[in-house]
Image 1 (cartoon, rainbow, N blue to C red):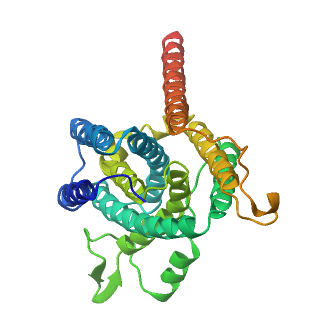
Image 2: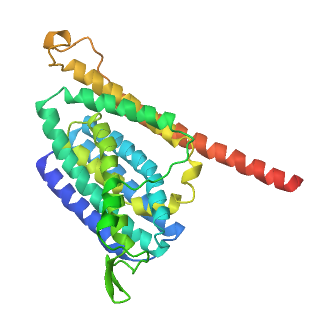
Length: 333
């Protein structure tokens, strides 16, 4: 159950819907490459809005839901930044023209929000009826964290999934884009453009992102309103962040390590909560383990801020040292 008053939730969802429509379906429909200044202003606006929204939650519902929102928003936002790596690879793999990438991102982010909404509804129904699902979420996040650490330093590549490979075999797809069109005419014949494949690639990739992000947010809050609004604020401004960080993503070398720490922490937190509310008969005879420690919400926020902040700072410092070393070598030659 949500601790936030119903009128506040209704007004918030209406305002977020307006934000989303303007951000993705109005601004995102303009086929141009945003300048650095435009990206910074756009991202800054939504970051400030998220901070204000958390403060309003604090005022109308108390500190606990507000801290849960900030924790969830920071986690989802950090995961979204990491996901931009894959978006860059997909755009490059399918040679999407630069002026069309913003439109592709707007459609992809819309798909992501719809999928996350479905996952949130399913997750809420599961945790309401079956507390043992926290064990699954928790171990899955631990596996994801381990996978992030073990695959660090490897060249990430995008591989077409079976759906897209099958699609290429059954329908005619041209190798040329025709603006935003999904269908085009070439030498008197009708073809699908690569835009259709790009949308499918983005959409199916979003499904995999949801598998990571939704268990993570449920490890921080059980309030579906907080879960949903955290995800919306994490997706708003994401296309501007893509263009702002597109050339810098490879310099955020330690970000996966920071995210791995966050996901591992949340995974442990979920497992502890599952033990605290245990109903499985083969664990303690089906009774809760009351001696299991309860991690407070403020501790979650602290771990998230420190892990992501230190990883980002370390990445920037290493990149700066490498740039200075390269410049020094150039002068000596």
